[in-house]
Length: 509
Image (tube, rainbow, N blue to C red):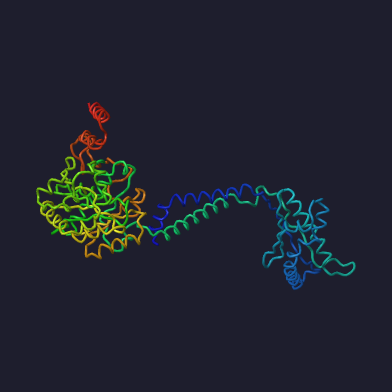
């Protein structure tokens, strides 16, 4: 992976990585502060071979002899022959084996020095033991070396550096342990995040679309459940801008002949196809196009629920199942205008027992052709592709199909299956909408945001000049305060709405 991909991995999994790092730090702190501190005291011993004369060759020979002896002395300095007298001398409550584990020695290369180190929980006792062992080792060496009666040992051991009590413990090293805990915890978090990414087979970004064009990335903000439609939020909110991007991309797929009849569907239910259909139709209507939204989900229609229309009204099923011939007047009779947006809506009508047969009928095809002549855009909301075949049937009669995938939920095999189902009937996939993307993932998955930054809120109006009627991209908040209030508080009924308007007027006065 590239560096930017690692950064995105860290940001997207920051909770897991942060928790893992914290756990590593806590474990390291627990081990560090519950471990008994150990202190080290070090003495240094000099090993020499005295020469009887100042003969240079004798001195060199003695020095070489001492260096060879030092290597062996470092191995036997913690032997019972040396340690048992030390135990008796200092009245230590331990045996030679225990004391041996506390005493270590090392001989630097090409020297006649021995570094003696004693580790203990008491710094004063560690220094006493080190000095006592250094003194006793000289006696041990004298007993070990061969010498004649009345002749001194050929090797002399002298203490050149006495051990001193340590001022701070040698272990545990708090700073190093805590840093190591942080590093190991962070590494474990990265490993878990990488494993999670490796095992995750859901749709996340454009790289997962396998060459299918990305038409728009729709963010899922905190008010999306309460206000799913673009007419219920600010006209410059990030979600509204994302649907404008979708509208523009569809219009410029083929500038000479844009797709007119567009099927909106998904692989499985609950991926946002109905709200995407409505919002796309509303965005096209806001641009001045003549648009109709057709509810072709004859199994579980949701459009009446979002648009607050009666689900018992006559609609598509009544038109194509009735004996009467289709006429512009009969079509007009079942159309419903949505508020003052200019959007026309054809509801599903009564739920039939044979929806697939109705949608594959010649009469439905005739209806599509008549709608082509009356409207610039025909947006058809269809059932999901994998559970039923309705959407594939309608796609074959349309100019193209737009697939909606739920970011982080739709699995890649499901997306591939729905894409193949559309291609199998000879239809064209116009592109994909990645829907319900968490706001925290937008800027890292796509490198830039579709719409305006989340920290400005749902009603963000950028670049407005104070005291002017228009900003660079939008009218100022002062000029449009009442208009924005009426738009954003459309869902508030009765006294609450009037009180809010009155408060806004008093604030301006």
